[in-house]
Length: 499
Image (cartoon, rainbow, N blue to C red):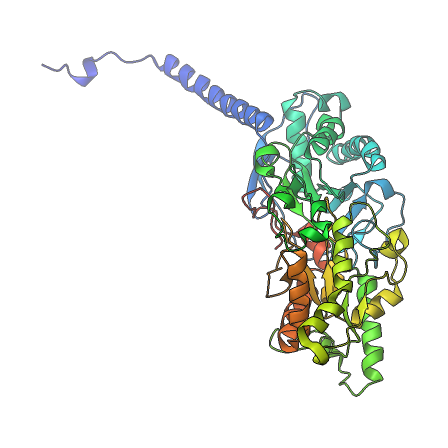
């Protein structure tokens, strides 16, 4: 038989109040401790700027370093201009960059990016190039900037805390990176990216100050060991041999080696069309059509795939060009030399195939304008003129690495571009659609002669390649994608795709 309720023993009221009081203290302490430990040991993920993150509040930290974790929204990009600070050029006067290429000025042609000499302002991205000067300057520049950003929030800054496992310090750094929209872009423009060297650079110059996962790596090369090895094909006895995938090299898997461990993201940034060259090309084209019977409407410079621009159908006196002199070999260019030699023989092959009906081919294998650094870093008027006069441009990569500055320069000029295979083609390049890929030296000769004799097909592919370059591979596109693009969409190797 159950006892009446009033006869059951009750917990003393004082004990009940004491337990409630202790629970009220213990639960917040536990939650704060768990959050602090979690933020101090986890890797910071890719920053989705439309999301909300658990970061320290903006309330001033006192001398006891007490700080609460709250959810703060990350401001989305609002189409205003973002400032870019070059670590090795911090003393430059703040100005908009007009010309140049990604090796000297990656923001050229952008309507959203400014150079700045104020590295501490919000919405400022730091650009660090793979040079010793940039790397030496970076560590001290990071410390100086953090001291200013801490002071702006009335937080005490202790440089020695950076190298320690101080959870609060790293929480504060995380909050600063998010609130200030501060990103570090490491631009590796070398012919071969050395992932181990980038890891070592981060360990020495970045990790002691701000930790991992705040650096976005932009690399011109994504190939890895085994590297490209194409010199064996230069012998004429191998001209009919199909290029082997093995000799094209491998692709670096950044997912296994870097993404989620060291880097915030990795992007492949191939060469693009410089704005100064694009302006010279437009100037020369307009001069030619004004002096001819061709319609001189400038709208024809930006056509669609359904129309053939007058720049594509422009009368062109050079049938095929390489701009590579086989008599003047350069480093890692044995295959290039063989390609130019094979192009020089096209006239004989044309005669063998067509007899008396053969076209007398005009072939250009010499350099137009200056080569070397002067040729790369300034516009060569003769080179632009010859591009506009070339029907088919034959491109060849170096023996030991891929990517070529003339690829998109030739495509935007309206010429049909033939290229040897690449392991990592730039976005939008599709064989027989926007470009033509040859699989051996003999195959290159066959395809050049075919498209010389099939003008309509040549024009269609050249037009699609030109439109692709106009809308995706000019300097402004490359810099906007590099600094403002989406890094979260990655392929199977962890490389963020061009958006």
